Image 1: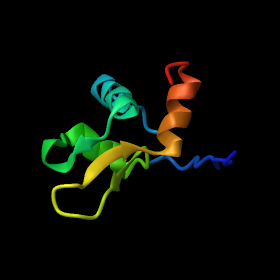
Image 2: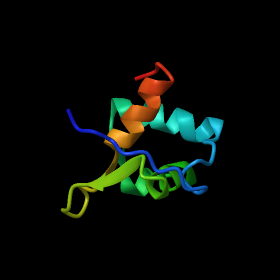
Image 3: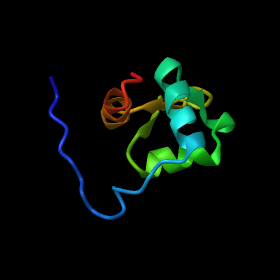
Image 4: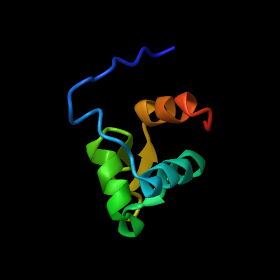
Length: 78
């Protein structure tokens, strides 16, 4: 099991919006294509809760990270 270290900097402690939480739940079910990415997906990426996967053109997608999964587990949603 991978241990996730907490980042308690002020930037890391910001609250997620309802849209960002909903987007995190969507990413839990299936990766989102880059061209369909919203500002919420980009905000999750900046927060380290989503990452870019796939390197081929047309294959790149955003997916949830271990940290994103941890957030959902804390909310009992993942």
